[in-house]
Image 1 (cartoon, rainbow, N blue to C red):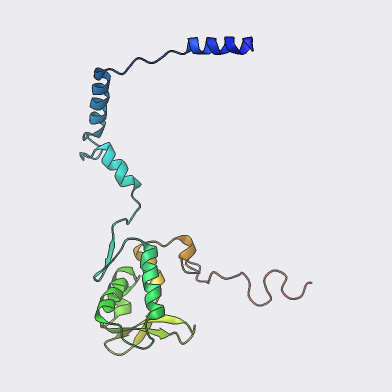
Image 2: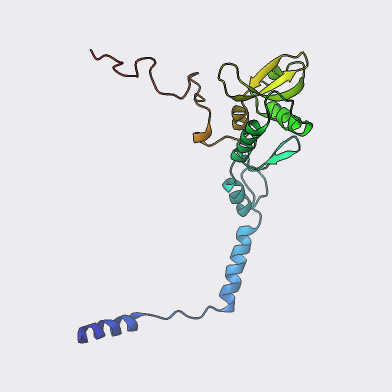
Length: 195
């Protein structure tokens, strides 16, 4: 017990209480902070401050809202959710209203890899239809010459604002194949029959 008291006394004696901060030190710190925030000459000749540069670097790419027609989207997920809900709740084989027409037209123009080829001679209407091959709901555009063509809103959204990896289209890695399991008939390695 006595040893513990000696240790405590030696520790408390060794502690040095800091001097109170003087007004001069406060002013010097404020002046230093002011110098750090003022504009400095950058390598490219601009006059941006360090604080501004750090703020810009922290912002993710494409953080400005994206306008599609009269509608604005802040994130790719919000844009994706909007089109998903729209596609699933709009009746099939019915032209969309003028508001949605403007939004879908901008989606094609800004998000499709070949918008001129897709639009052709002009778009008369957009519809939600059941895809003849895939038997699922899909957006279709009806051109002025009454030809119709489907398009992927997911790919368009991903082209405008990149989607998270888990929301990208299967096969978007560029190999032309879907994101399904490897192998064809026979269930992959070894197939049905082992040799």
